[in-house]
Image (cartoon, rainbow, N blue to C red; front, side, top):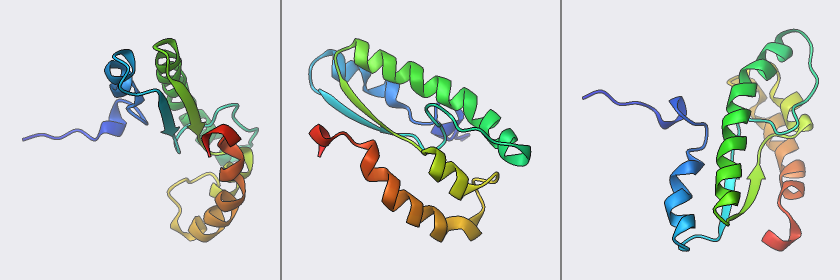
Length: 118
């Protein structure tokens, strides 16, 4: 059997929740999208290429979030901030940056979740 990673279609698959939002079973959705970057962040060189790779994933997440909100869900988006992107560097698969990314994310992640969601 062939298998396809869900990330090949969507970085979050948040749209799969639409039927559950529409029928009232889900009111709140937290979308964790490490491969998108709402608002982006300026970059040069290799980091610019990495930002360009994120762009279509960000657009897909934006569409999915818009659909969920249109169906009545309250949606919180959690994705890398400019500081997180800088810590990740141009190669978001670079394992040598894991500790630095964790340190930065521990500082930035709490600011991404509205007080009402805590």
